[in-house]
Each structure stands twice: as structure tokens, then as C-alpha cells.
Length: 439
Image (cartoon, rainbow, N blue to C red; front, side, top):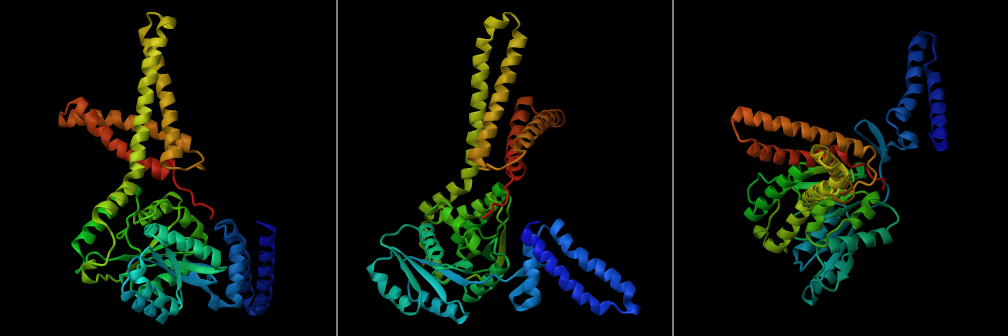
């Protein structure tokens, strides 16, 4: 524990000692002793087992002095974040609905509203001027840069202009997110300041445009398969996070609609929790006001979605090329040294080439595919996985060949294809498992 932790711990024990005097009556001596033992050991258990350090004692002190400013989350006393709730709305060519939407947000006490005009043009400036008169902060791009760039512009402004932030909420300007849901998400975000919260729609309800329904279903399925996180709505624009994630969100790659998907992938890679909150499904005029370009933006989204897996494929191909190239080279180079000892020559060439290719593949996966610089013990986990894959491959080929009477070559192809997918998931979830970043 730090020195500060000892101070909090000591003050907390003094408080408990004073309150415990009320229990020291003869007829309650036995129960008082047990209560004393419990209350004196409780903080120590919180320090050693749960590792709350001075945060637990500080929050407990705040709870005892002012319980209205604290709440309980999963059995833990947590201090309510202080500061402003910021609503950030990127907007391109809005209509009168945005004015109404801002009034609805204000009705729920959400008054810090930032609108980013992403190159709408002069035709739409009367609407933005009206928003400015209603107290909104207006930021403007002279040309269209994309939703991701608009969000990053807002994030930079928030970080520069606000000293204390409770949470940041991003919402769309086309009326898809009810003000009530924005308020609910803001309250939930204050309870989980270190997480990304998503307002997710229920796509099993009616009235959803087929294009939106199909796009979300496909993206959610592929996302769950590749990244191991099942999210029913990966394209929602209603999101919330605490101030410690603000700089992180600015560093997420992407400038247009693909930015929101990259945000989810980056959070999973960095070990940042993602939580969901059900919201209403609102589509006006069949979502005719959307600026999502079916072909161009879908291609960008899919390129982001498959980028990690494609990098894994490239890394595997690179490892195979290195393995084959070095083996061929050594088979010729070792010939003068070993003469007619062909088996020993081939064995040495194979082993040396395989060791080098394994290290190349490991380094590529660590630094290029999964980008986990701080992954202690990952080399030993990787080597263990390699041994496991070899065992499963040989066993699987044998079983497929003997049980289904399939050619060994075809069985090898089927088995290794399945093991390739297994290897990707095992490396992502175990070998190079994401560690929670200190933000």
C-alpha cells in the first residue's frame, strides 16, 4: 500500500473504533468482539484481495460523509463522477428535426451540447445559427471530412475546453436516438467511467429498413466470430464513455463511418470493457436522411472488420515463405558439409528453418497483427499453442481418414483450415490477450 493508503486506512480504523464503543455492553460483549473482528478485517480484505488501495477508502469516506454523491456498483462503493455531461452530435446537412431534438435533450437537463458541422454548406447555416442561439457550441468543417473526423474534432474541443467531465455522449443528428435514451445512457456511463457504453437497438422489432437490418446482422455476426464479442448493434451512433477514455478515442484510426467499428475493435484490443443498454428503435421515412453510402462506406467498414484477420493471414503466409525459403537454402548449403548424409542434412535444414519461421511469425503477430507490446509470457504461450496445433493436426487427419475414409491430403486440408481459425482465436484471446491499458 502507498503512504496515502495507510493514512486512509488508519483514519477508517479510528472511525470504526469510535463507533464500536456503542457496542461494548456486557450483554453484547461476545457479539461485539466478532463485529470488531469483522469490521477491522474488512478494509484489509479490500486492500489485499480486491486491491482497491486508497480508492476504496476514499470512496468509503465520501459515502459516509455524503452518500448522495456515491452509488453501489457490483457490491462496490463508487464515487459519482464530478463534472459536466457533454453531448456531441456530428451533423451533415441537418433539417428542422435537429432543432427539436436539441430542445428534447435540454428537457432532460442535458445542456452542454456540441454540434459539429461536417461541411454542410451555406444552405444549412440558418439551422446551425439557430442552434447557436439556443446555447449549443458550434464547430465547423469547411468541407466534408467524415463522421469519424467530426467526432475527433469534438473530442479535441472537449479536452481543451472542459476541466471536469462526467461523461461524453455521442449521438446522431437524424432523430434516431430518443432524448430519454441519451439521458439513461449518460446516467449509466457515470457508473462505469472506464468502459465504453453502447445504446443498442432491438432489430427483431418491425419497421426497420431491410438495408439497415441486413447490414447490422452481417456485421454483428462477423464481429462476434473474429473478435469474440457479441454485440447486437455494432453500428449504433449512441455511445458514452468517461473522461479517461477521451484521449484514447482521439487516437482510434478512421475518419468516416468505419471509425465507429474501429472504436469497438480498439477497445477490445486494449481490454476496455464494452457494455450495452437497450434503446428505442426509431427510423423516420425509412431512414431516408442517412448519409451512409451503401457501396463506398460498406467497403470501408468491411475492410476494417477483416483487417485484423487479413493481417493474420499475411503473417502466416510470411512465416510459410520464410520456412520454405530457408529450408531450400540450407538443403543446398549443408550439402558440402554433410556429404551423403541426406537425412541429417534435410533434418537440420527443416528444424532450423522451422525455428526461424516460428520466431518470424511470433514477432509479426505480436507487433503487427495483435499489437500487444506488453504481453508477458506470450512466447511460451505461443510455443505451447504451436505444439498443440501440431498434435491436433496429426490426430485430426488420422481420425478423419480412418473414420470417414477421406484421403489424407483432403483430410489435412480440412483439418488445417479449421485449426487456422482456432489458432487465430487462441492467439487473440490467450497468447496475446489484451491487457487493460492505463489511461
